[in-house]
Length: 264
Image (cartoon, rainbow, N blue to C red; front, side, top):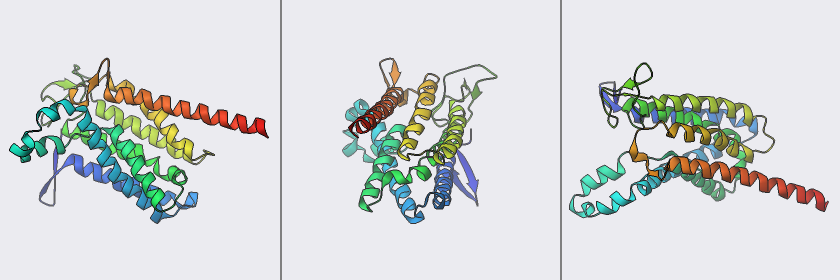
């Protein structure tokens, strides 16, 4: 709908500008909430920044895995036409779940390096994840990526300047649906973080809130680039695995508490 915007005489990519705005707003909110939980703002900023680096690496790595057959086929282009190869596989193409895993690993590694308790920062870092993601999905709508399946008016919206979606075809605005869902999850996590007795549970709450939404919305996505394996997409399989991992982890933690209670 609006792939570029003009600021101070310069034409800038809308997606990039919205992504930067979301990251800065998320960082600001996380830092403002640190005193409430007795956390160092400097430490939170380090974890946020290094988690962001991990998120970029993870999102790109998982995307490349989804297009691995094509990547292997096009590998000769790396030395024949390196510019075209890098433009095709390194520009754009991100998978959120890869970014989530990469971000967690990056922030965890930073916490280990600085000798910090990683979960102590969950109340300020986890709630801002859906906020940043909401800005990203708004950016997706502006450029026309991650688009929905065809649908007639008034539900469908036709793009005229999309970079990825077919122009002139009414499509479901799944990007806006996910953006709205992310904002609801963001509000819930802000509330939950202040009341959760165990900070570690906040990450699980986020996954349990987001994964079902992503699983459902994938049925309305029309972009094949996200990868489909069998009856489900890559993100749907990961959603199922993530929910199962959280529930299994909580069951295991509950069993451990019961055993300790019996031992005492």
